[in-house]
Image (cartoon, rainbow, N blue to C red; front, side):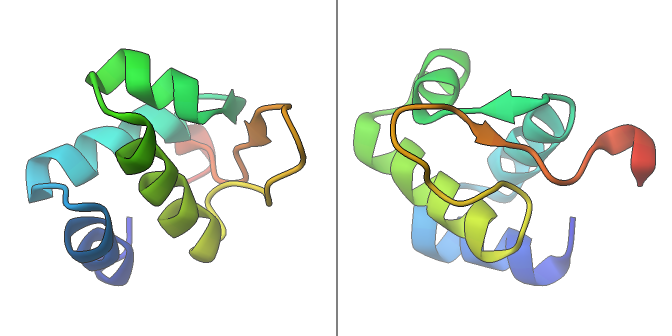
Length: 80
């Protein structure tokens, strides 16, 4: 995770540093991710999950929004 991504997750999505790292770690181990996945795993509201996905998309961690299908994860932990 880059420092810029961590900063954006903290400032724009309202996460603590530890939560930002936990979200990135979780997402990087998935093949695809959705707001619902984040909501269930981290007990988040709809808006916060959406803000997280926006930041992950901005930093090319997940694919663009494509309707109701989950987003593809573009960065995987095993490739880092």
